[in-house]
Image (cartoon, rainbow, N blue to C red; front, side, top):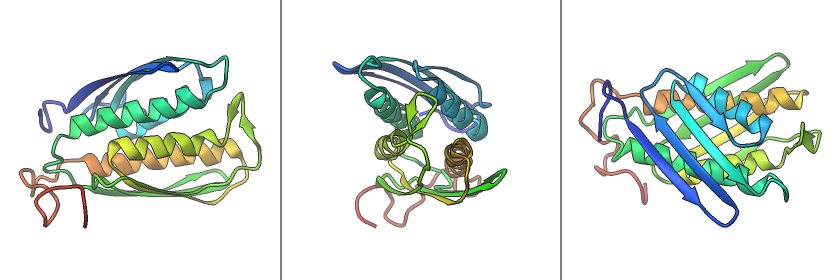
Length: 205
């Protein structure tokens, strides 16, 4: 697996009866993105994820949007997360932990993660409206759950306070981005080591 400086990259294709998604990541990129899911607000959030994590991200998705946005939203999280997992390889040399406290005007959100290969999501985010644009706000948890599962992250997302629903969800994606950026960085003092006393990531503590 290419290491820091040469680019940790991966592409995943996910095809079901409901969606067809291709996701490509470069963990050592500059935050360049090309996103097309058919869901405008989700595209905007994934662009934020790329920009603030410095992970180059390409996502092309088609899905059963004539039914609703659920399958495309969830499956894009799975595909991007799986690409991140493939690009990380055995996770040797990564910093592993990351956290961020993100203000957006009246909103403050906190994200913390462990790239432990032990998926878990804590989601403490509430919305005052059922939709943002055409997108159901309940689908954001589904995206984060799918991404945490396939990226192998213990992920805690909490909106501490806020009023504007756009600001709330965008601060969560930016918090994820900054936390990922920190966790995926190669630690120059331990670049050849897996960051665990077990010698492997995943399974029990």
